[in-house]
Structure formats: C-alpha cells, structure tokens
Image 1: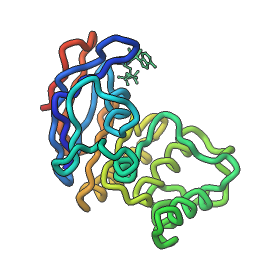
Image 2 (image 1 turned 45 degrees about the vertical axis):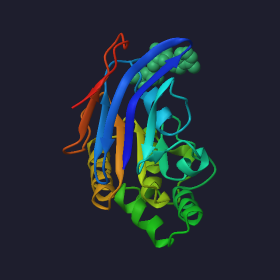
Image 3 (image 1 turned 30 degrees about the vertical axis):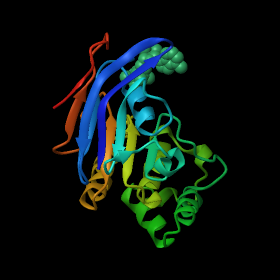
Length: 210
Ligand SMILES: Nc1ncnc2c1ncn2[C@@H]1O[C@H](COP(=O)(O)OP(=O)(O)OP(=O)(O)O)[C@@H](O)[C@H]1O
C-alpha cells in the first residue's frame, strides 16, 4: 500500500504543490492531470524517491517509504520521457536483458514483446525504431521487472490506438496481480476506476484526490 500524507514540493525556491494526500491499495491506480508545469513530473519523481518533499510523508505498507531509498527503488519502475534504451540492442535483446536482470524466465520476454505488439520488430535495433515503437519497448519492460509500483509519466505519448489498447491490457494485468499504478497524462488513460489527482496552475494551494 502506498500512502502520501500532506506532501509538498518546491523547485527553485518556489512551491510547486502542497497538501497532496492519497492512499493506494494493491490493484489501485491514480491518474495525475493538469496543465504543463503544474507539478505532475515533480510528484512522480518524489514518489520514486528521486526528489525530496519539502514537507509531508510517503509511506509504503505503513512505514516511511524513503527511509531506505535503494530499497524503495527496488519496489518501483519509473517510465519517464527519457526511455533509457540502448540504441545498439535489438528489441528482443532489450527485453531478454530485462528478464535476466529480474531473474525471470526468458519466455516472459517473448510474452512481453507480444503483449506490446512488437514481435515483428524482434530483431530490429532500437536505434532504427520510431518514437511510438520505442515507447512500446520501454513499456514492454514494465511487467518483466516485476515491481509492485509503476510510475508512468505520460505513458501514451507517441502511441497509436493499438498501442494504447495494448498498454491498457498490460496495466490491467498488473493491477489484477496487486500492482499499483500512478500515471500522468494530458489524454484519457486506459485505467478504469482510477482515482484522479488534478493539479491546478498556479499550483500554490495543493491538489485533491477524487
Ligand atoms: N530543476 C528545476 N528547477 C526549478 N524549477 C523546476 C525544475 N524542474 C522543473 N521545475 C519547475 O517545476 C514546475 C513543475 O514542473 P513539472 O515538470 O513537475 O510539471 P508537469 O506538470 O509534469 O508538466 P508537463 O505537463 O509539462 O509535463 C514547473 O514550473 C517547472 O518549471
């Protein structure tokens, strides 16, 4: 269970948001919406333990999530705007590598490739892929890493309709197995029954989860 209690963040000496609170039990999802610059990425980084809250607490199963940041990092996968894929690897090599790192059966890498509609690109190097194809590869790594918490910054950017549907199925499977998802987006996400946190600009007075 992930719980944010009265989180506030500052950047460059300016308050970006405050009074952000939510509780996400296994299987739940939260979408972050709001205008450019409102603080969605800032919150995702904070939830990933990459930034520091100016006040408030982040709890994982009732304990301070960030007391041990490297332990927290192993609970989560973060997909941001940079996909951190190795240009010289093929799609199949990329996913097999991810499976190896996570110690899962290599057959899962094949399944992840199929799930994100990448089979026909198995032997293509990452460097020749289109933006949407790269995004599919970055998202196909998620289930292989076997992390409970997925933090996704605008995950559908560059995806076509089929890609969005594929991601919807992958996210549904994650939630069905007790995973938690927090995702920002300017477009509707395929995350049924997700709670919503809307950021306003200027973001001075906090945001509310609905
Ligand atoms: N390194 C930084 N130093 C100072 N201010 C920053 C820094 N990085 C981001 N900001 C500011 O923090 C605010 C929130 O940025 P953030 O990236 O969280 O917004 P966002 O809601 O994710 O926006 P978008 O929809 O454009 O992705 C913005 O006003 C931005 O200018």
